[in-house]
Length: 475
Image (cartoon, rainbow, N blue to C red; front, side, top):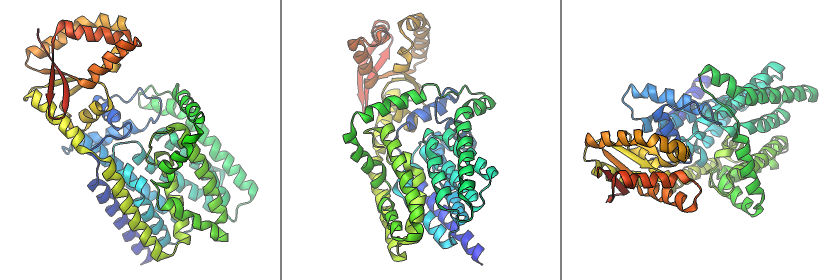
């Protein structure tokens, strides 16, 4: 009966969480979400320098749901929800492996499922929601290792964290948490056994970080490389270190607010002598994860993205030390904070009004949209699946020489489309970007392209609903 009750509890939890995430699905872009959707639309999976597994997995999922006539945006957002729920199942199994009674393990998973940061990324198109699945796998593998410390299990745990790194680069820090748990939890393993296991775990993790992109990329026919990714992180970190005054804001944005109330409740574990080693290990991981988030994000509001693997350990500590009645209050507070966070972020009217304007100008004809900024991409990715987008910054980024060589063919293509009655629109942001690049003389091709458009076509300003820009016509 106990196993049946536990199974019914897990099924109820997962079903409720999935209904919550899908019901609160956001229709607003988040971080790289619009760009990821555009890459999925064009099938561009092979030229990435980080977060390698997301596009192949999300693309395969979207293709499967396309057979059920599910639109791409809804399918990709559902991928975040379903993968997050998969992560919750693994986290519950990890709790049981760590020796928690099933009610305590289920309680910790409920608090994790309702954590505002977890809910947020379970409801948007972004990598961090699906990353929860891989973080859950890593913690489950760590729990198996803690149950019986062997080199084979240590290597498996390292491989799981390596896979998490391939899903999102923040997975590079998972061994910090995993080794901390290995050091704090096992009671039967000797110090030497744990040291060897920690070494095997870390070594296997580094092997996956170093060789995984090339090895798995070659199997999928993708040219994956980490070249440049660490250099970009170095630039971000250097900027952050020049502004230590940004640190307190980062702590609030990335931990205290998006993980409330767990971000404070876990501290009660220090009052329980038997939990102090575990709380200490978690504190070390929290400091290192917080430093990573600060160096990577600087002043950007990441909604707790880089610290998502810490939600469940914080819930674990809270469940073991906070009175049951208070835990119910924490769960309700989590729901309220999650709802408020989504309400503050989700602005579906933004892309909807933009899309309404484009469709009004299109008058039922196919549209080519020359676009530039984040809001252009957001509207195209979420609300305009029928439009063919062309990124102007990418287009002119090849340089003036290649651009000039390709203009005759572009003219032929544009005039053929206009001859068929199609619409070619230039967003206000794209025109402003070209002007800015030309005035700053940082990208000569921008001026060349802008002059070309005005020379070869009649460019008229238009405004319809939420769209502002220009329409190209034959002169």
